[in-house]
Amino acid sequence: MKYVIVIPDGCADEPLEALAGRTPLQAANLPAMDSIANAGMTGVADNTPANFPAGSEVANLCLLGYDPNLYFTGRAPLEAAAAGIQLGAQDCAIRCNMVTIEDQIMVDFTAGHVSTEESDAILQTLSDELLRPDGPLAGLSGFDSLASRLEFVTGVSYRNLLLVRGDNACPCPITDGTRSRAPHDLTDLPVVDDFPRGPGSDLLVALMNASADSLRQHPVNTKRVEDGKRPVTHIWLWGTGGAPGLPTFQDRFGIRGVMITAVDLLRGIGSLAGFDRIEVDGATGYLDTNYAGKGAAALKAWDEYDLVCVHIEAPDEASHEGRHEAKIEALEQIDRHIVGPIWEKVRGSDDARMLVLPDHPTFCRTKKHTHGPVPFVLAGSGVSSDAADKYDEVTADQVGQNIGDGWLLMDHLIVGS
Image (cartoon, rainbow, N blue to C red):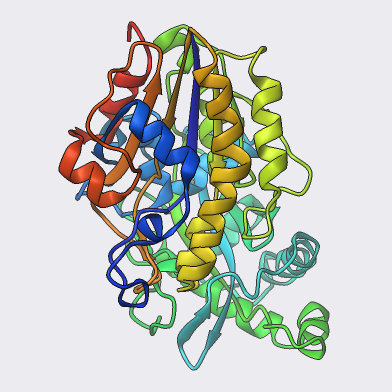
């Protein structure tokens, strides 16, 4: 049996006045997704348990069949796995966003989608200036012993990491009790009450505040302002956690998988799940991503792997920017260039199944991830058709099955699980 999962990140939404009371999924022209709904089974699943933040880290673990109550330790460790970083038992990884904060308002959690090269230059400066023993954090409780154990790691664009290496002699101050807000949940909101809290937060807050001084006249920012772009005013530290331990898909289901994505979070989850990875030229994790390239890569991987997972970040990015028309365009591109060609392959096979669903809802109105069920559609070998003929939130809720906890959906996809 062959399996394909397509994840249009954050595509679930609420009815919008600008769309005459429709959601972007309802307003978009999605012939391939509607065809799958007509041929297969629809429903809703909840990938965002109420006791966890409504973020991609928890939601994508759930979507791929991992109960976060058992396996989630934090977002940053998942992204560290994408970079091949091994975390020890006393180590901690922390997500490090490049952000733009003006007058204590989170103006842009991406700092104008700063480039990877610019982020790398900024992190090198912060490492040189902030992590030295005689730097601006000298005298902070515990910093002297930790300074040599802190490391900035460049990721992709605004998404980067800070590592804290601990041992028995110098334990990491960041623990399960350390809490921080995701910057994309603070868009256009004051940040003053949302700095990290709990154990080790004094270190994180000090680094965030000190970064503002280092970045004020940074050459990267000088050039960005000259070019009419937003500067990186701060780093924002969040998503802390220690080493996760996930059983692989090979161990769980006896199948070999591959992940196609432009986002480190999904690369990391895929790596921990034992998936190989395919990098697609022009895949950006943004609205300008190479949709056709991802679709072509999935078809090319068909013969080599038992399961192909394609993740597309674009709908989520459009939601975070509050751009419903861009979200519709992203959905139509996904349908045309990814879902359509793959569905043709699946329905032409006697031994294949295809699942389409987002990880979580992301509302254009609020520009945030939110809790709640998402629509799914599953079709292919051995899957009975229900009464649905469209793929959207309303149809899935009214016609389809309610799976409940999202991590149970994988058992419906994989035969014999």
